[in-house]
Length: 315
Image (cartoon, rainbow, N blue to C red; front, side, top):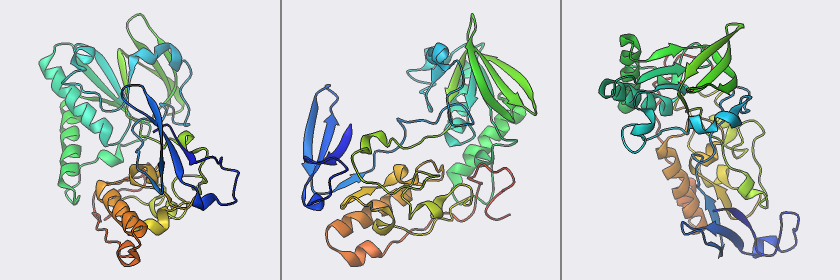
């Protein structure tokens, strides 16, 4: 989907707005662009196509354009189609979440199979709290992921450089020089490739002609934002929510799924399923089911905030 608007109306026109159907501009795999109309729109387009920049300040580091061909998006297919790109090379994985963890594990496995493959993990905090292994984590797969990364770090298969905030990147004869601030000094890491596993943010450009009410910090629906703010919520402490928290000033327009969490990194699929169920019930006129939101999230486990001082839900 390229854009959403009201048929014959931009966002400034109000008279009779709710009676006019939505108009969606859609780009197909064939390259053809068409437009379709709809009574209601649930934007569950996710955030994977709009990753966060490498810089801790929310911007691309200086020099990014000259090394763009040396940077991979999160979750490359290291052991599959992207294997020739990573085999025998030194890769720096940037990020402290579960996308980074999965990539680190596959790169470590590739290093066993392909001579000369090495891995460095760059994180901006003192610890990668979201990837810590915890016996109390009610999501066993998540705990296992953290434990596997820990073992690889302890064995030396993954080199870790913490407290590293990227400032500039520059091309070298064989790869990339990554310059960053670390403990008050400038540090350098030389790598062949960079995997940017720095999280995601919503694409709001496609919604320029739709009336939105989003939190100015998290970029989530304003009524949902206080429930998911990563500065406050460290685990599955999100309260049940549905259509009421997700509806926008634009009648019959909703943001759901991972995109509804804006820049918060704490989304779980179970949340998205319940969001959409509630919205669809509301659109069907079934207020009882729309309001009866049932959401059970793991109340213990690893920390999901970037604040290293917050250890876990149960600490």
